[in-house]
Image 1 (spheres, rainbow, N blue to C red):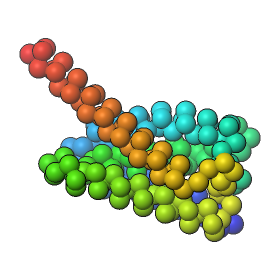
Image 2 (image 1 turned 135 degrees about the vertical axis):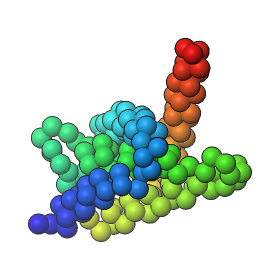
Image 3 (image 1 turned 90 degrees about the vertical axis):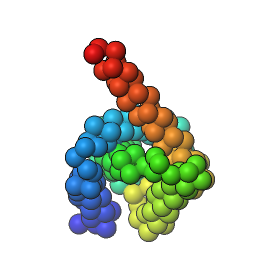
Image 4 (image 1 turned 120 degrees about the vertical axis):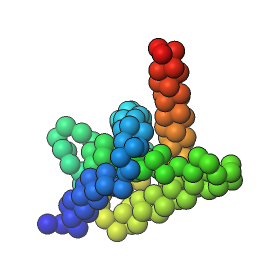
Amino acid sequence: MTIERGILIGVTIVSLLLVLVIPREKYRLALVAFSVKQLITTILGHVTVESGALSYPVREFAQVNRTSFIYEFLAYPMMCAVFNVYYPVHRNRLWQISYYIIFCTGLTIIELLILRHTNLIRYDRWNWFWTWGSLFITFIVTRVSCIVFFKTVHQEYENSR
């Protein structure tokens, strides 16, 4: 087994185990965040790969998908679910912005390590700044989507009483 396949298996296992750190009362929030992020990464992942900005030389389902299935459909959405579950709602704005920065920076550093030491990802017309920025924006879009979704659900519940 190559180091790339080992990493893909490890990322899959860790992503699945992350379900265990989600508190039971926040499963719905995690599921909505996971689903919204999957929708976003499905579109952006394909656009990015098809435009030639980056590529995944070693990937799962290579015959049907040019993106990284585990990253786009499991690992990244699961990290977003964890992000939203532990989002510091009752902290000040500076703390909340720092939370975004810490998550985006951590994930970007991990991607750069994978880029430098494996053949899982290749930047063709891409750089770390694009990764960090796309993470930041998609985390914001997902967070706002969760807020709007649950506010709407709560309002409908209150109106039906």
